[in-house]
Image (cartoon, rainbow, N blue to C red; front, side, top):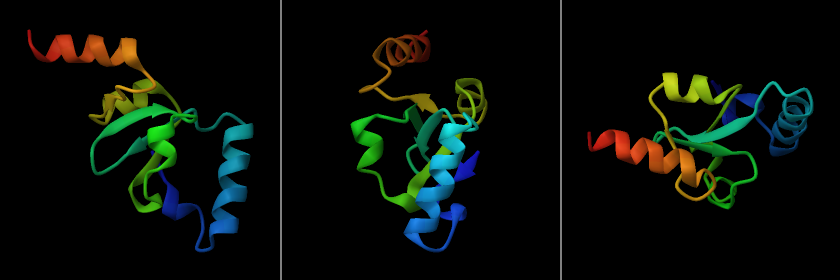
Length: 88
């Protein structure tokens, strides 16, 4: 897991490092550390998130392994499976 605020002190530096990580596919999912939710990089909910709450994952398995649940907006099918598994 990579914390967004740990990518640099200046927003420009963070943006450059983030772009490099995305381009090299070192990160593939984003998440909210406070809410323990992960989703796609392009999720509108994730884009509105405060940088201090934003984290990144190399894989879905990494996010799930760290106790995060799928986003109900950008990962609807995964969220439904997760939700159903919570009620069984």
